[in-house]
Image (cartoon, rainbow, N blue to C red; front, top):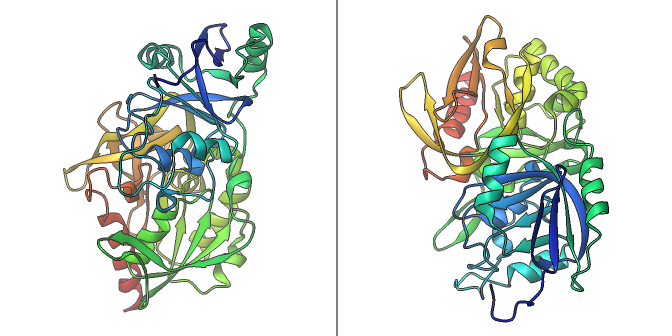
Length: 386
């Protein structure tokens, strides 16, 4: 812990089974309830906290050095943090990085997000792996006074993520254009000035870097809210349709998203590409099913096998639901699976330029293992135009 850390606990994490973890609070004060997951990534804590896919979740970081490179606005995947809170082993040190524009604690405080440090995250992660992602309550009170019975009751009262549509809470309020490409030394983020393809991206909680990858692949991107209909999408006369990542139960979001996707598939021959929740939405539209995972996949070191090339990609993942590979209908091919547990990580329609993956190819943990997916999308649009 920091040399200036309090000598008494100022934060408490209560699990629904009554287990309590005490530590030192930083960031905002107050209380929040959520599902607890763990993330094994060694870098990218800012991107993780601002990834809309983490709505309704508190993130336990298994890597102890969180906050040591500070915060920079360039790394935000969304305007503000979306994850409900953060659990770390060691309190953040003073940032040491030339890009740092502030400290993690100040950043969280200004954005109303609670964090707790000094926690035995190894013990906590083992508990999550053993019993599944628990419902928890996290409180930060500088006075160190906690009503633990009420905290446990609050954790037990959390409704959970099953049956919950969170995409509606994180999607954009109205459509907008995107032309910023991926970061490159030394210019940083440059605009796409010569796009070749018009793409409609349906925003279920889109990360900025996914949109940048589309722009870098030659796309002129129009982002539409999650509630967009088939008619809304086709009114832009796109060359392709992208289905973004996002949080929550895919079956709940599918109530309105699946009819739109079915309309695109039935009425057009457009290339369609989905990532994460977009992958699950496409699978549901094709007649497959999704299931809630025990503790999900969250990290930047997940090996995924591409069964069509035989290659293994090191991928970034963040999902608590998965497509049931056994439920895929005839004509839908399973293209990728996790080498950790064999779960489905990719599908495509046989004979059509329609495909999706569960992992996040834009996060570049490989670092470029999966960028071919964006290039494949561009090639499909180019082929259709011939």
